[in-house]
Length: 218
Ligand SMILES: [Zn+2]
Image 1 (cartoon, helix red, strand yellow):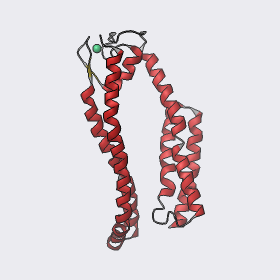
Image 2 (tube, helix red, strand yellow):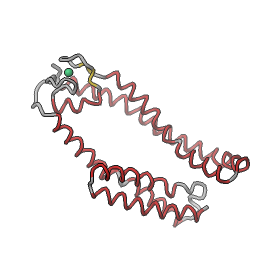
Image 3 (cartoon, protein in one colour):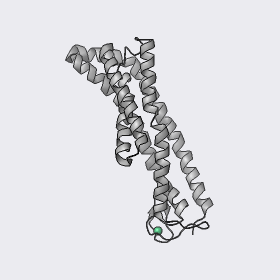
Image 4 (tube, protein in one colour):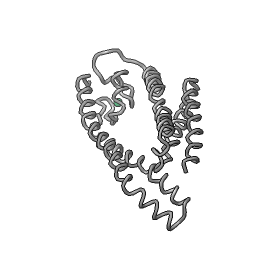
């Protein structure tokens, strides 16, 4: 039998490993944008001269979207490193990935064999955990999903106050509402929760306004 203290110590160790890596990833993305600010103009000018204005436009968009893998690669490396903290089930000897430890804490049973392996507390069914996770995720998305339309709205307000503000990067006027539209749309389809429809609608309106402002800014 494992004790809750052992499990919590392991989770704390994992968080201590993950946090610096994630901060490094965020720092890397900021550094990437700083370097991008310096090299974008000469690079796009070169592409426009060699291959035309459409290729120049595509290069700008590709440069922005390449920040996503920059963020994902360190996260994947961190996830691999975190696998070191995986547990062995004392009942079935199978590996319990560290990401399933929250479930273990709540249900007190092994996610692989279903045997009770954690001391103390009440044993709960796996379905209880699933419901708990779904409610938790949905609550988080209901708040954080608004980040994308808010960022898009702020970019547009900035653009209206200072039309030269996004002159070098007019794609910023529609990228975050587009991300908001896709993510809220996806969650809305999956959950049929109407509260995500408002997120989707706000992002869609801002996306249309952003695209319009983008063409005017060109
Ligand atoms: Zn087991």
